Image (cartoon, rainbow over the protein chains, first blue to last red):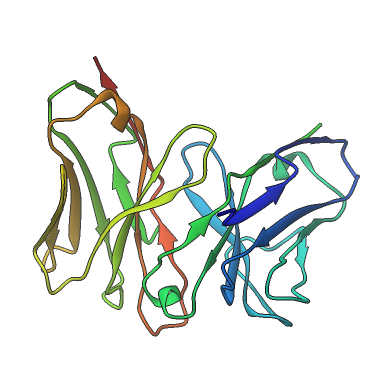
Length: 115
Length: 113
């Protein structure tokens, strides 16, 4: 089972460039999330979606955008990349039931470096 | 404001020893507390979880202890093995609430052979 698939795994960007991190899940989960992980800082929620066409901001949304046109895909867009966006990004999903219990399935992450 | 405080930041244990990671929270609306395990280069994976109406939950060598009055909970890893070396995150959520899952900052556990 593929679960949650993220691409690319690694990317180096120059300041001011833009890119999209891709996320796909094959578990038919309604809920999807984007987190960023910085050393010693835990996981911070960037954006989340409770279903196709519905997205909402998390704790650290500035500098990012998302869209959710289908249940399977939840891309994260970085506009005008800045060094502060250097991080490891994780996409996660959960069923509607499990969203209340924090039972998330995570992808393997996308490591982004902005120089 | 850090909603879930986790300690220690790093922990080194000898094989066969007991690893203990502590977490504390302030928001009394939190009513479900999962723990995640993350190996290097991988995403976090759910390890074990507890509700506050239970003081202890055990799954194999992993045990969560919960103290509702103190708003503290901890993960104990008995007979720690080198394969347990990973980063562990405690987390909390209010079921049915508008807040999403919040994570502690993580504990990097190293189990020496």
